[in-house]
Length: 420
Ligand SMILES: *Cc1c(COP(=O)(O)O)cnc(C)c1O
Image (cartoon, rainbow, N blue to C red):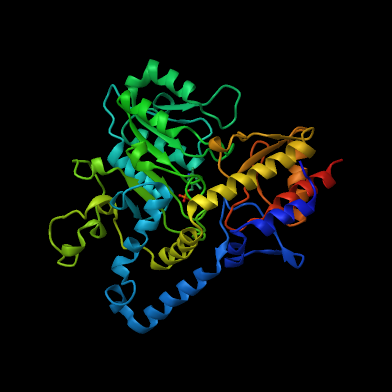
């Protein structure tokens, strides 16, 4: 392969999405743009986000309470304004998707509805290296329902493969113990390894065994194509501050499959889940809104909704198919550079097959944890920003909206220069 900087610059020059980088604020290092490869943790700020926030601040200044019902959009409709764009990104019907709360809160909220154990069927299956918040959440529901977490929580992983769970491993477990499983919680993309799980296959295996399935798409949304409706999981949650660039703590997303919309499920209710038509009648009894909106409890943060909207408008302009195409090429280029020039030093933990990953590559320094940590800090001191995940993983995520092929080249060149 051509490992020259000239080749990387040529790829950028031919990239039809390259101009989207100008829509973002890139943090600086020593007077130059950082090589920011950590959009999997916090996406960069779209320049238009500040304009949208200022617009709402002005509406609040000028309209006061009237802003709830006046202007574009009136605040009562602000979450619904995003619905179509969000539903398209996750492959859902619009009424299956809503924006509310944040990820872990939504997970708890939907577990109230969907974790319904019996004395015989009460176990919860997650993957072994699940994001800690997901584990804490399901353990708290086991405990609240009176089960022992030691017995009730099952953590699965392919043997010796950090952050990988294959259909075969999952299927084998469900074949023998599936009749005890009440709920399975799966990530679309595993956050340590960057591997995509075959969640559709696992969902249908779990449902055939009689279990309910939730999915966590924190690392998948805005990164890989999703098809939640056809994939048929019962519910899903995601955040908007990683690949969706909504800003720190921005409002979360939730999906409830439409087949549950009229089911008699237990649910924590609040006034914002009441149908808009009767919400302000302040009626005595709850009259649920259509679809997943019935799960909304409180009126959402408008400032957070508009920063998400700013970013979603960029996704719509670029087109997700084009973004994914660039992402496959960009991360593929980074993987090839590493294999061509750093194979003796660096192991790539993420599958190389583009269908089995998103944009993130998880790297392990072969010389061990101390050498890995040292390399990570050296890169950081040069303005090349990824992140570190224990025990010894460096995550680097070139995102197609604002990263360049030259960013990948600079990362690999810096690792080469840092070699002892
Ligand atoms: C980022 C992330 C979270 C964080 O959740 P918040 O409640 O939004 O802080 C939870 N789960 C997974 C899998 C994540 O990647």
